[in-house]
Length: 73
Image 1: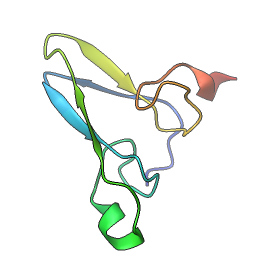
Image 2: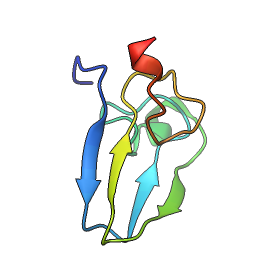
Image 3: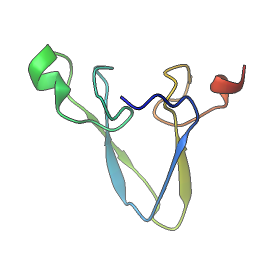
């Protein structure tokens, strides 16, 4: 996993597969690690391609996979 605590921004996507097992090296995006570690599979999150979304990378958000600013606290 990248050593970043700030959010990543995505736009132009109609959905993403969000990691629910917390083992993905690309968290919050599923990388298939649940197959290796035996975790739960990903959850599809439907998005509006016209909007920009900020995805959490710090694991502290209360609104997974979206950033809620917890990395600033």
